[in-house]
Amino acid sequence: MRELCCQAVCSYFASPHAGVVCVALGVADAMLSTERKLAETFEECGGLDAVEMLQHHASNEVYELARHILMQYFEEEEEIDLDVDNTCLLYTSDAADDLLCV
Image 1 (tube, helix red, strand yellow):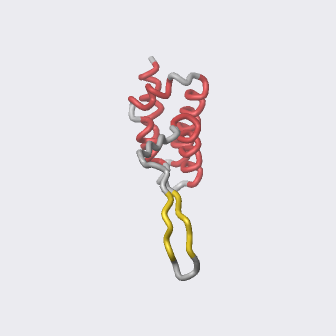
Image 2 (cartoon, one colour):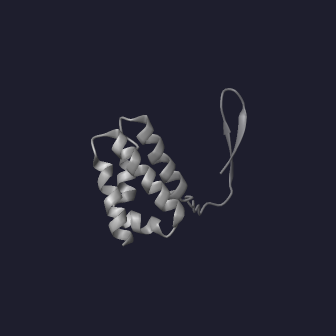
Image 3 (tube, helix red, strand yellow):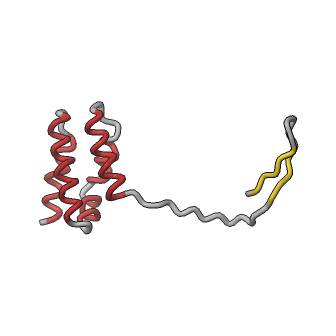
């Protein structure tokens, strides 16, 4: 049932009418806000990819709604794994000697 609902909403993301797309994004937002588990189903149905593409839509309203959904339900913090020892290097420029720590 979840998958069918997600597919139905996602099918409207391809509409050439910005108003229809905005309504579909609003429905997707409401669905995702009520049930967090739905995010995985939404992604499996191609909803995440479609919403990412809508960030390039000509309508600013569509862009804003798409961005909201991505930030609210799908943004993951990137983990940066640096295998670098903390090292400081002294480099010289014309202005001054600077200490660069990495």
